[in-house]
Amino acid sequence: MNTLTVDLQRAHSAHGVPAAESFERWAQCAWLGNTTSEVTIRIVDTDESAELNGQYRGKNGPTNVLSFPFEAPAGITVPLAGDLIICAPVVEKEAKDQHKEPEAHWAHMVVHGMLHLQGYDHIEDNDAEVMEALEVRLLRQLGYGNPYESEEAEQDS
Image (cartoon, rainbow, N blue to C red; front, side, top):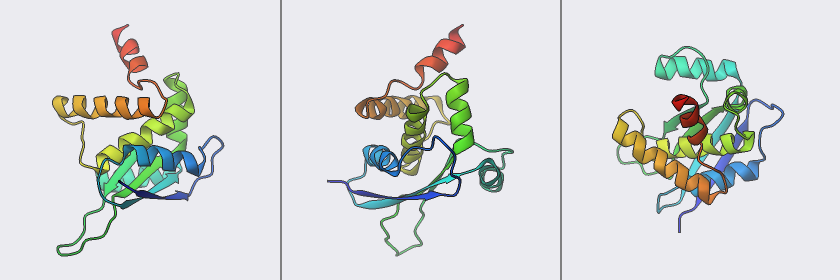
């Protein structure tokens, strides 16, 4: 059985940020490893997100979720998956702009970030299809709809 410990850090306390139990449930569902591990999920404001996005990805401005997989030094084994940095104002704005339930969008950001921590990516089309299908399946298990359906409908029109 896989066990994931979630360390939630609230560096930004916006109205509408889900309860700690929700983050734990979402992250545990998306932990596909068969080992015990730990993830830190840090809720931040736009300034911290923009600073980290610029420093580590070379991109300007805040982003919804940043994933930092833990890379242990040679010979060291520590059960850490890594860190997720989620920008509350960006997630809330995206949910509103994309006509999504905020809780469902928060869940999607956690699932998406957790998959990145486990090596999934969406740079190449084939990899994106695999990752998106897994996200949809995991979110369905959690009781949420396909997060890409409304985006696809908007792109088709």
